[in-house]
Amino acid sequence: MNAENNAFRRKLERGAELRAVRGWGGSAQEDAEIEAADAEEREKRRKVDDAARVEYLIRDAMNQGKFDNLKYAGKPIPGLGEHYDPDWWVKGLIQRERLSGIGPPAILLRIEDAELDGKLDQQYTDKQVRDILEDFNKRVIEARRQLQGGPPVITKLRDIDAELERWRQRRAAAAPLEPEPAPDTKRTWWQRIWNGSG
Figure 1 (cartoon, helix red, strand yellow):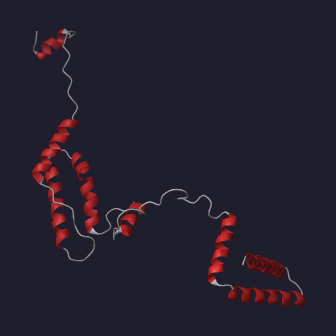
Figure 2 (figure 1 turned 120 degrees about the horizontal axis):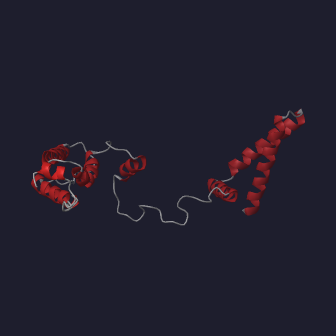
Figure 3 (figure 1 turned 60 degrees about the vertical axis):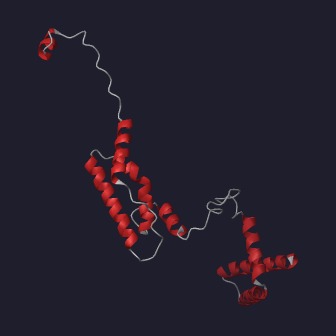
């Protein structure tokens, strides 16, 4: 089999050489020789089965170094051992392309739910937090009502009062402690009169 592949390769190389000669203009005899070589090459390709052709092409690509330095060479393929997720391609596309705002409502709501605490922490008033939570809960309920197919909506509703309390606790923990004012030992006479303490 190996000798047969080597002979096939030599004939391919000879055919390439003959085609190169054709470019600079040869005689009628050379043209006939090229045509015969091409016909022989086509016949040989027809006789070689697909498995041998694939094996040859792979070996040839390996010899040329086309498989060197592949992205996951020697590393585990990501996501190979995980459970089957029917929406893997949608999630992969959204993550790869860094898309936002597109996709099935169930997946968008899961992503928003994971990032909701950070969004709430950026707000300044209870009303702003309450409005965001009411809007989120309304969209979760609406997504559950739609029967258009797609992944199921498993995002839970947020308890607005409990979330407000958690937001206040996080806000209080993040607030810097106010330092005690230093005693006013070196105040000028003007500052003492202005502040009312003599």
